[in-house]
Length: 181
Length: 363
Image 1 (cartoon, chains in turn cyan, brown):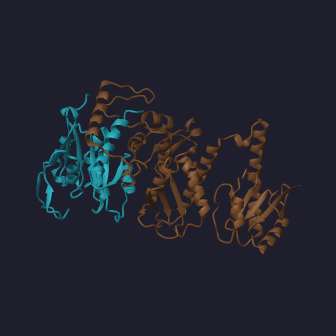
Image 2 (tube, one colour):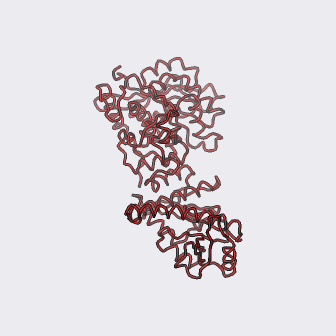
Image 3 (cartoon, one colour):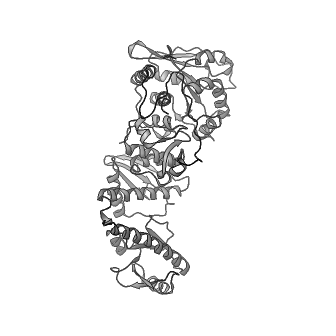
């Protein structure tokens, strides 16, 4: 298989985890958002939420583009996730530790993106500032292990560009190092 | 019957008299007897109070390892390193005898090593270069510091202070049952400098909180300590292993990722590699890699295979990670650079160039 024509990374996770913010932190163009009034206040209290997808991109040398897709947080919009995931370089799963069951969230998104995780790379970003949560990043890492994967789990502040770049660099490192046996 | 001479330095007179009486009563089964001398010049074993002026002066002298030091303190203390014994007050015959058995055993090992070296026509003191000896001594202190820290309660938060003269690591904890005197701090500083590119000053039991200090979690502190100090030799827990494997990634978001940390983590994630192969895959300096491995070991994310197990039938089968379809497997020693792989490496280069991730650079 040759180098994929579309160079893309998916950013996913539950509502309010910071997907749109993370995408905006690294996109070199103004992200395209598809936000609507949040009708699911039981999940999160924010007024607006992504309903289709967010899109951003980073221009590369030679005219190529890294495309960044942010999925909607509500899983009822997951019909197009498999289409988006096909051929992706990797997936970033953002976990909100203030939600009732972050590990259940992780398992849901892991199952949804299992094919891209197995074939390429994945990184878990845990919202920094949730130190009071009963869970730690080590607990999330242990949950990944129970799913059969040793994945990077990093505490990040997705408002900080370098923190989001850390997540992307973790994806690139996995791709690069997978070639060594 | 072999007599071992003992001396007491800095002990109160009543304790010295009691020690002399107890030593006369101790006779080990292999024929050792002990006597207390007034002068330490011919002593085989020295009992000293490390807080007394005489004790400090004695410890400052070079020790060839032929004189065994037993620290005597009125407060409960842990042993300060592998060659020091701590005798706690009040003096008891049983504990003194058990300690002397250990001392005699250790002395026997040292004597045997010396005899072997002399038989080989070697001078023991020349077996390692002076700089290496100092570095090894500094590393032993690092190991000891780690041991002490691991005994601290979870509430104790080390602090890190970046100052104009380097990095200060301040452990401000009343629970730390070791007092390092001013002279010893200077000694630590000098020795640590010998084995670390970045100057690091370790202060234990700071008299008062240091303004401007960065409070670190225990994990962050271990990580910093490994990067700054523990980069000479692998910690004892992993020193005998030929290959290394991560059971989980350290949280580099909280710890701060160095230039090559992510790549090494990706390489060692559920796969075993020797240090040599890691360095072939990632252009990292030997000392930085040792610091990384020590840090991972301290954080409990390391699994490794002992050398003896590696060559036995019991070696666990490691399932390699499935490769992405677009990548061609390569041999570490001789990477196969296929057009596809070359294309991907070029793409990763472009991505890194465009995104400009700034890894943490150690001071």
